[in-house]
Image (cartoon, rainbow, N blue to C red; front, side, top):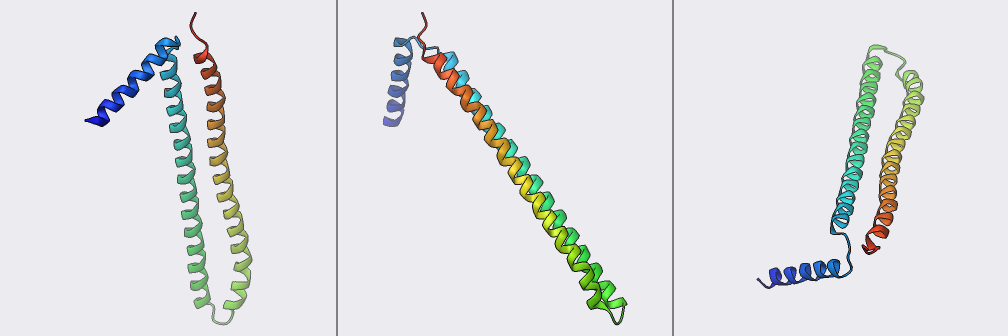
Length: 138
């Protein structure tokens, strides 16, 4: 019960401050709504980036497993030369692995860059909104 009274007193102080300084409560609430939307947008961007990352990793692992299985099957079929086939397939697999890792890195970088851009844009907007809110109504 004391926590409810404390919260009510805190809210009353906030409303009194807004009234005394002739601040626009609608503008304050709108600013907070935009903050929440920006955070939701960042989370959606990061989620999409992580989903893309997981898809790429799954494709990479599936392709690698298929190549290894193919190599094993061909090695059993050709009686005398499995080592030569490994020497042919290994450089291709390594090149493909490096390209896959480069793609994963690009995906993570893009997701982070998009998120930082969204937060930066909202920060600039927030500064302008606070300037407008803190100017008393005349």
